[in-house]
Image (cartoon, rainbow, N blue to C red; front, side, top):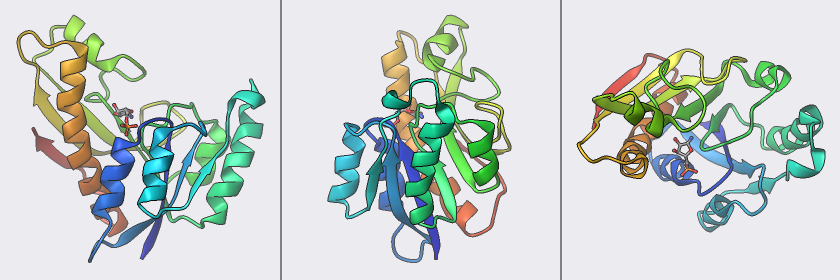
Length: 197
Ligand code: GRF
């Protein structure tokens, strides 16, 4: 049984989709949900689901990313995870952190990478007049929002879409794609998954 730690910064809807998927004959189980924000509402959801949680407030560490990460890593390593899933985790990780978990760390990003790495992905897709948008699950490397593709889900951009309506359509696909990718990944199948919403 693979042990999965999930890192969040906010509501944790992707985290909960992953947690809910890891049941029955699924080859993995969630062993920790950790956040850089002690007030992240996803922590309460994880606790209600019976998952151990940890929080390290990144703000007191100011620019010392490595010191913040050292504290976070202590909590992560205590859970002895085989796989790390970033799910709405909004801190840029140092190469040191990535090196420690590379090859067993996944992230979900709300765009069809390599388009729109970084923030405000939906507004950028609308501004570009794109006919479709979506989300990507990838292995995390030292390059932000890059790394080997593990899955992508596409949705149409509809007339009258705002960043909010498009984000909601993509988020529904995120909640389908990430669990599907994790199930395969945990079973040792790293071939990419392509779906259309
Ligand atoms: C989602 O748009 C996800 O793509 C991004 O963070 C946002 C919030 O995710 N990574 P969640 O509801 O906290 O899982």
